[in-house]
Image 1 (spheres, one colour):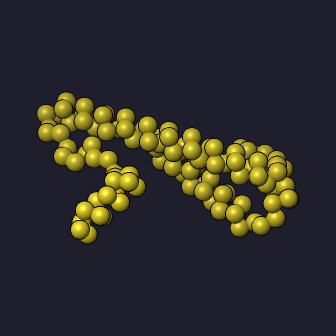
Image 2: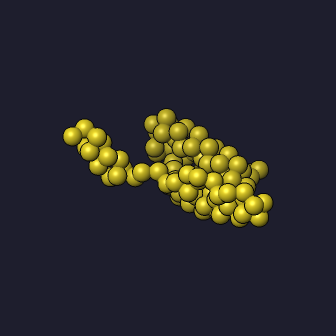
Length: 105
């Protein structure tokens, strides 16, 4: 399921990139919905894809968090120790800047 959502996210990214390359904002663009093409305004299409992209990002993140719990449960059922470093989270922008300042000074 994560792979399918990631594939759709990549397709959305390709679509957004194609819209950014197209400089004529006044023209309508053709959008594919399933097996049907619809002509839509450029800006409305871009906003719609960006909203879909945000939704996909949130859904993928939710599934990845659930996956971590399921993997831990599986290891526990098999009698194996919990994976070390599996629950790590990346640093956000502010934390990364603070770390760089500490390391420089």
